[in-house]
Length: 224
Ligand code: IPE
Ligand code: IPE
Ligand code: MG
Image (tube, rainbow, N blue to C red; front, top):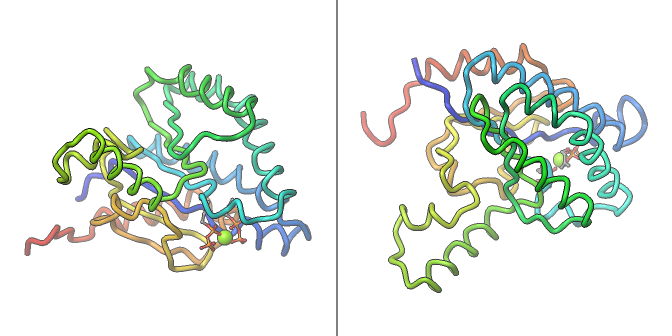
């Protein structure tokens, strides 16, 4: 059986769910938070050590301001309410992406990371204003500046996922089969599951089913 150490998820389909069920894209984002809570529970139950959640891409700034503002407000409320409990559950929060939000949100993110930095049960990497192409270009620039040799090990040192093992499993909900600039380097050997359900409809049971399937995949890594 394959060990499952790191799961990455592209949480897609909130907008469509919201429009369909509540006539509002933003209502879908709100509903999506419940799925996040369920997925955290199942991750802990399955002894998963790293959970990376794609919450906002570098391209998502192209959305209407009203939706962007709502998303960050939602995150702010969520963290304010939930960070102490996450901390109690021994969960570590790490932001991957560029923290260039409002002063208030930046502060809250930094505080949440600091508060939970010593925790060891589960590390949640929240990909916020994250773009894989930007991350790679940035890493190469840093390698150049430090005159370090360009190789895999050195490049990894300058990625935002430094010290995080590559995902074993990638799940994308929302019935779309693409990567949308997510962890292009790190997903080189991940098992990929595209899920029809929209993110707010995805639940712990769906996640458990994927985990079970994953465990029995023959992972070759180039070997036979
Ligand atoms: C994913 O859901 C969440 C974010 C990108 C913030 P979407 O908002 O992309 O939902 P759809 O794909 O439009 O339904
Ligand atoms: C990917 O979803 C980003 C997140 C889930 C945060 P998008 O909905 O932004 O992806 P595209 O634009 O459909 O590829
Ligand atoms: Mg989408």
